[in-house]
Image (cartoon, rainbow, N blue to C red; front, top):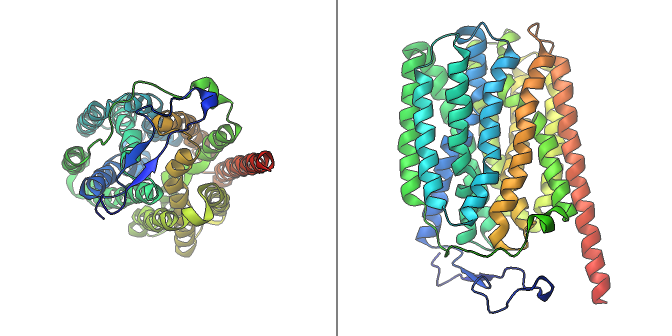
Length: 432
């Protein structure tokens, strides 16, 4: 749709109590809410998610390969640290990248992060068997930090173009990680055996490099650099709805990656068909695509908070169901159920953070802080799961822990809803 047809004004909070000048160039902000450049930027951000979050979500393939073939001198818990550190750096890097994004450093972030990601994956291809530190440094730290520089900016950039369609644009971007988590496992599972580790990772790196180049060329900013910030960290820290949501992100993230890291290994250890085990993550992430797209069409009616609370509760139930995994049918059911609601959760994180931001100039900061705490949960979650799993593969211990922490996250999101409801009632009372 042409920007001339649909233009909307997003005003930063204009309360005189906060000392804002109504004539400030920060308010109002004119957003085109569509247009060729807007959707080209969305597609570029979509490709970033294919290459970064999509690759991280495919670590279950590496987990299975490392445990059984490539790093056999390390425990499952130690190997899972590679993936969890990668995810931590990817997600928590937003606390720095978000602030730099707010200050106008979008292009250095996406270009620099993309170069670091590609370089690190190439170095991964040179890692030798049973050389744990080489894999950890390249895949865990290097690729994670590269992704962390691009993750939040590539999502937050939609705030330059959309108002009423922002949630839809963000959920479309979020489906990129699901598509990547389908493409990368299929490619890696089929090339590890045929080409060997080095050539398989090189081929994967070439794909990532090409897509990131296209993404960086497509994404464009649409606002002047903003030098003044209307809210401080002290103000954000007193927003209890935001705090509750952030605690929800951290708690839920502790258990969130357990199915993605361990489902393929779980299916393999239970003696299921090896080819089917390879595609268990593909089933999960295919369901995740649907789960990520659907919220974009419903969020304006149902609310991001309501949907994310329900989705996290359903994810916790699906994780707990892994205790009974023993057949192809059970793997498929868990993969579909968990994948759908996990996709809903991921698709709603960014719209939720935006909805809790009263000023467009603080979106990057709020997202960055939220993702920092989420990253802490990711960092400790799967290694603890690996410790509980043990080398004897006692699945119920790890599954129960991951399911309970997931449900705790859902409780925090429910607390956020209560706080927001009380806030609305208080405002209505003041008006009367």
